Image 1 (cartoon, rainbow, N blue to C red):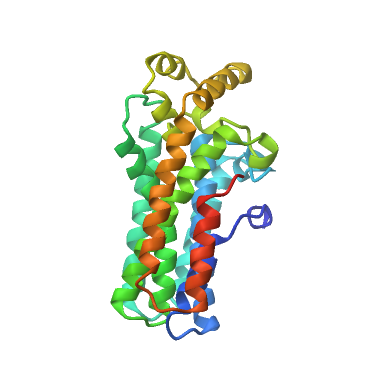
Image 2 (cartoon, rainbow, N blue to C red):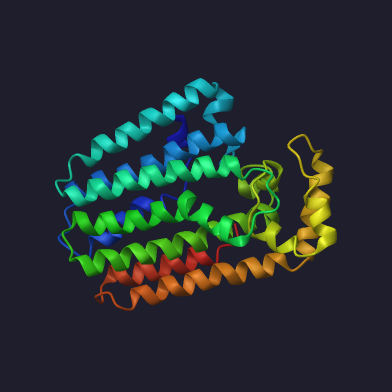
Length: 284
């Protein structure tokens, strides 16, 4: 309840429900998928906060800081199990195969994130592969499973999957930009926290094209003083890296909008279009 009440955008269940509108929409079926996808996301955040040793999430104490790592890990496991149990209400075996594969990939992404901590010699491809597993896959599958639960034809659920994937990539890149450009109050956690935790994101990668800035970023470690990380954030913001990151995000957003062109004209299609634009251009 503590984790649920901390809030969140709930975009994954929204995508499930909207994707269901392209087929035989039955809320009693769809709600199981919608809740399951949000629970999987929630469980991954509880585990993430243990990996990152994070004390705040959405402005509230994380499970691991309010209780401890052991409670957080068991809570995450329990919530994952709840999600799988809910999905048993969906009869289509394809839905279960997709969900199982997604949980495997999300877990691989979490492991990769640990391996990549403070690895400053990674490239943009490494980063994109990581955020695919961390964020984009679950959003893509939210769209796809919503459509499958509504018995749509294969071409539609695959197109919705691609839409969700591109939106998810754009969404995570924006998230990573906001970690440098927003205030702690807006983020609900300290600004620059990603870099301080060793997560090298698009703005840092672009900024490191400048050798002087690279030398400063490579000095980052988890015990660094807040004043030092503030100086590095300023260097990144002055380097043009934020603008380059916005351009990258917009490329994915345009790909997402292009995927919608081949879908039937419905109110849900317009809503997906509107949400994608809000996600791709949000400022906090």
